[in-house]
Image (cartoon, rainbow, N blue to C red; front, side):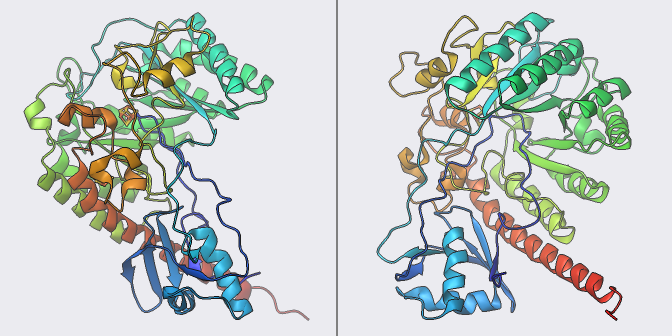
Length: 500
Ligand code: SF4
Ligand code: SF4
């Protein structure tokens, strides 16, 4: 086995979390064959040292393919030889180049680091299934105009059939269904019918199926939780604080808070062997209590994501919800200090950065307008769940994915539709080292704040304040788990009975 010189999020034994947030997740768009290892001169890729101690050096790589490489002392010693173009002279240096080239740390001399390609390699076709327009809660920041309408099982089945056709036609190897609403458990029977049908039909079509339920957590019970478990449906639950700070923005229609019942249901899910993902929405109302929620979740062993409030016309109490950069940054940095003292086993890179994803480089913030379809309860199709009231296609459309993609281009006639703009075309982001990880933030937020889809995110200052600290934490987390693993391994070797 080659001697290891570095740790990266990709070669860490700690997996990349699946993204189960209430958005169209960004997908890695970088091809892996841009490098070949050959006998030639190499030099250091653009980088920033973000943390170091006597044994480890953590580097941020703006051009990727991954954001982070953590060199051990030997790796750093060899890497320093490449400040100028340098040709390897020993097998040790060649072994180092093999690892460094795969991580993007070294590049062949005279070759500039490339930008990620705008076209995503087909990985998955994602769909939001709006099972109902009804909800038993009245959260302050909800973007939905609620009615009692529900999706029928027939509509759900037609959606699955159409998704299979689209996935086959566009060569996607898999389909992801996000059961959402409103509160999707209000329409649990339809969810069951769709899931059972999708399992059969998607497998028969030779495709992979991934499913997640995005719920407010109040209607979870033993019956629906057992169904989720038996059918491998992941569970994502919204929780915005402990007690009053959660209740202040997530309450029932009569004003009662929902924290108590959700915490009981989360405990039930754990007892039944289900590990829920906690989606935290950060607003001006709950930000100052974020650190105590983070401490609680870490202590109980829950995985969680941070999502920043998105302004919308249906939100209540908009002034209180509004994000003030300084307050949000303070709350996030304090929360990251708490994480630093309790480093979890899961990767921090995709979970705590709102719409950004520090795992790998990409040109688009999310999949909206590319490989994402949002089906409302009647089977009409929108580009994003925030635009569910403005469908651009429906189930009678023989090519809905093309329709959505076309509506998302700058040339489309529908001026009210979402337009997607790659990071390289956002002039305000051109000089930003984070642009291939942030990609300018949610395009709808940019449009709302500035009138242009090509503007940078209104949360830019928040992002720039927390990204470096987050990378530092991830570096320390990788080192911490590497050292724990190494100690465990040597203990188990020394406990082996001596050979006779
Ligand atoms: S929105 Fe801000 S942090 Fe994000 S890429 Fe643009 S300039 Fe960088
Ligand atoms: S456009 Fe914005 S709200 Fe819609 S999926 Fe993308 S990041 Fe999320």
